[in-house]
Length: 245
Length: 244
Image 1 (tube, chains in turn purple, blue):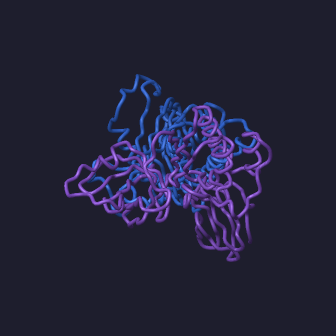
Image 2 (image 1 turned 30 degrees about the vertical axis):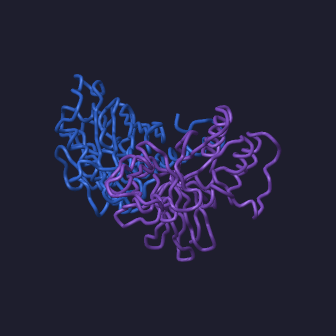
Image 3 (image 1 turned 45 degrees about the horizontal axis):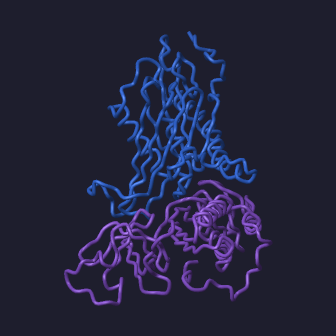
């Protein structure tokens, strides 16, 4: 009876997590008879009576309210289709794209051309995973210049950090501008290639060591320039990164 | 008269060949694994969930699992295997799909597909079982929802002796009868998701063989679990073993 694993253990599908009715299965786990077993590869988190898993891998599943980076892959009659690093693509309709008046039959490539990268926000996801996005909101725009890298979507919360602390540290210390999309696409723009490459290297390091303790300090050390700043509430991401957490 | 009372390679009747398993061996795949049992080796790569085309194959209720089993040209015991699909590969792909789908939960991926490519660089019998073991690790590595892993091994009878994990020599044993029975099992429940047979065996011996398989599958499952965990424990020691 009781719990069979420790907090922060790595478990694989089908592994026994707890027996008896003292614990309840949460995200990533399931109950079979008296037992709670894991449903995917992940990190165990025991939160009171609830046992849940933080996934370590897997593709991005679109969620309402997420801010993502997408690539225009097609232009339809009344909008744009975005490829969003997920099994499903997103639709940006004309009325959500701009407040400007667009005449019937106008050339949509004037606004967004194929291969353009866009920061957009998901407004709706249906049961069949049809995704609608909007460009209306703070920080939502077309991206120009810079680089796009792909990271594991499950590591995005660690890249952003508590209240954006991690990404703002990388931004200030490498002197770059960074936007992290929930779908695992990251846009980086610096004044010179060297700072961009340092930022990319740092993000790759965060991604690789996301599940290990003491991450912030190690990243601070990697970047140089003293210990990591304490997280203060008012440091909450300003400007373009609003809502990207 | 019982002739085959000692195995060619000196194993006990209920002993499998040595097992090696690794997760995350293919960098560009969403999930991947290597599984070797004796001289039979399998690589599995998982891609997806991703868009499924042609469109008529899509299922609006849940995601589709698609497996592809392939023996590489010089992986067999005799002649070069002609590359590409053949009737045998097609059947094994189908049974692999059916062996894995009971544990896989693709409800949250309507109209999408999960592709599993199983490649065998070297075989010495038991290749479909090795393929299933590798595919199961790769699916877990890809972060898909699964209620458990699947472990598989063959059992059989060679000239009157019930044994497990037949190698090619045993499968091709000439005297007495030979039966070869690949079995896939879901370790947590003991449910069987693949059971095929080639040859003749009595009811009693079949029961005995399956009981032996169950114990072996639990052992194989331990190797599968270890492979997945090692991928992350490796990072702790900074040995850079992740996704080489």
